[in-house]
Length: 618
Image (cartoon, rainbow, N blue to C red; front, side, top):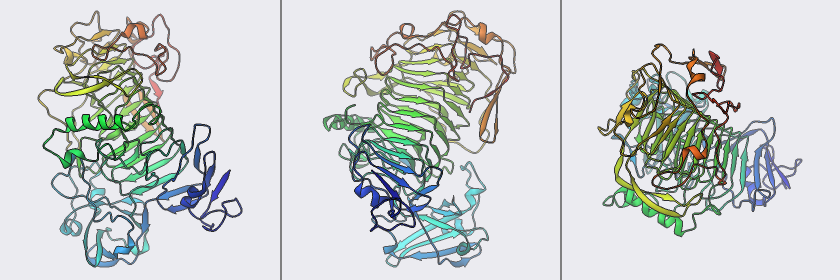
């Protein structure tokens, strides 16, 4: 059955095309497995809290924007009645009843692994004509704003606001730079999400084609319930596709865990190390039913995600067996007012049998962070650039995980604090950072399952590098200050020289090193190019991205061999082979574009045809 929703409808209607509901929530209350909710053009200021899900992939509940129409779900409300305060600053006081269950201007961002950088931060936000302002905790910085030195957009950081709450209500003060807010569109966050179930187990839901924005999301720690602007809340089988998701105070999409297995447990008990707490959370999640049968298997594809200050996509334990494909994720953590250990374009804990394919991730601070228990996961055909921390951070995993046919173009390409990975046919123009991690013991799993098979420290190494192209000479970071980790344990190099002293040996072959990049000292017959000036450049035009690179002819003639499950072998710690999620063998016989490779001589790097000097890569 199909239910319709329109701004011209009424809650007392029956949801037919002629008598649509007024709100999405009204349709959600009556929709049953197999039904579709079609939402027509308009703005819907509500939090959709689906009371039920579907029962199978063929009997799901589908929420969709009407084809060809723009349906917007906002977690904000319009604010009028601003009064001039002084200079460019205006103010308004909102009574307590203006807000619902939460007041984002009382609620502070907090949670495990969150760092406030010395000042409080609220989950609320102010938007002027769709663009968010920067919160400060001092009225003086609203009256006389100065560029915030950590911001990636210093000019925008001078559009500031602050808030206070007392028995009269909540007072907002904002610098609108000479504009009269009563003549503009001014909105503020009032809801903690746009689309999120209030209970786990709302399975088999599709959310398609919406624009969703303005959510007062809380910090999504891996040891907490993770509420995103849209989130699956410890469910199975969601499809989130073709949406535009923006302006979440913390995270855009969450594929995260429940509250019952623990909620910010380290903050509640700091006497115990955070890693120990997380191991206990995993045990409680398993006791509560964490398994492939009940959790994960989501499909997140073709979404555009931007303007989120923690992560574009985040998931602890709940993202297993999922596919994250073809998303454009950018402008993550650009204000840089706070930081923490759970940030990135995509940040996943327990990425078990996850496919991360064909995504474009840039200006995200950190591009992709695979943290703990990445096993059976494949990262393939992704484009990473302009990420100031790194493109990929693989932290305390034991593998097997596969990274192939990617473009890592930021100044730091890969931070590898793991073992048991395989990097094949990548173009890597940034630095490699290697570090063992002996102070934490982290789990690994039975093949294609959540059940624990053991735990280990990370000794470093046991990593495969085949048929990659390493290009040295990345320019040092010269922009605004960054929060780069300067841990003295880090060993950094262009190429694989950082692995010279790793505890477990590498397996290498068919790699090409250019522009000063150095091979692993035990690599057999590496191809080191003497010619300088081989660094590629990017060109962006009308949403398209081109790689401009005089690729050397040696890439096609490098001593490469087709990489297969048999060649990759099994990992030292988890003792598992590199295979498909269904257990079948791998053969890396296609390139970044999906074009076939020559099995006898597949070439180095992500492109089977390396002769072109300008390639459209997005």
